[in-house]
Image (cartoon, rainbow, N blue to C red; front, side, top):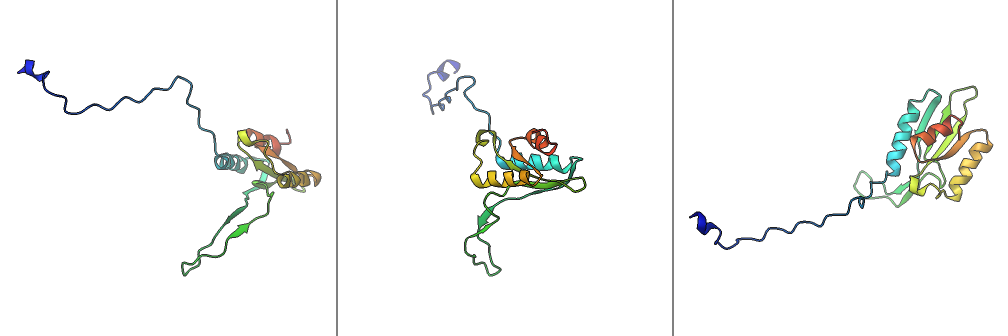
Amino acid sequence: MLAMRHLQPVLFEPPEQPKRRRPGTIKPPRPLEKDIKTAIFNALSAHPLVLEVAVVGVSSGRMVRPDGSRTAWRRWGEAGTPDIVGRLKGCPPRRFRIEVKTPSRRNTVTPEQRDRLDETVAAGGLAGVACSVEDALAIVEGRS
């Protein structure tokens, strides 16, 4: 019986093995802007110099009425509004504005965003572009 087992026909072909990648060809995932923004917000919320901090943004979409119908397309906020705004402790409290970008898009600040950041600095506040928690802390602490 054992000798006959190897003579039986193959019932199915095993699936082909996937091709293996060369070592080092898989790129690490890039952080999303919303994840960076959340991390910065959490760090600034616990920072001893920060009096208040808020995440602000420009969004658009449709609202759903109670009867289920949708409103016209709407936009909230102004173009150029920074992602994170807040005030530092002190008398009088200083304002800060932070525009959050991913590391690969650090230099893609729009003219409206740049104008808002420049207005804040001209008024005596702190402003800048942050790609990480460390960048944001440097802006708030005046090290950038």
